[in-house]
Image (tube, rainbow, N blue to C red):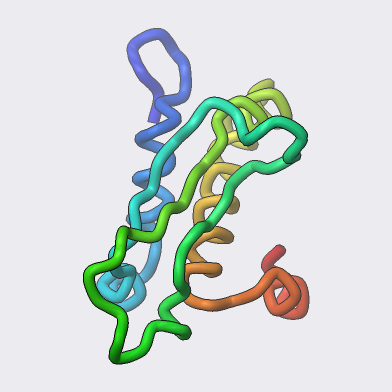
Length: 117
């Protein structure tokens, strides 16, 4: 989505990426906050980061814990892909879905195997 200045509405694109999940998957996303931050921690070349306990590792003792956190880093994405609005939109979606995959317990290695990294 584009705001009134012609700029891409970054936060809306993150929300749209999450909304693009099939309804059955979207319904099981549980106890996770998705936030946008400007930059990753110093020295970490990240576009996004999942922090938490994946759904596949949550057992009967999983209760009363803080939400998992998916962070999408605006600065690196805009620097790498911001010259082309459609490219930036695609990359935001790719990063959001990549981090959601980690929430579902899918590793980077498995994402590479299935051609989704």
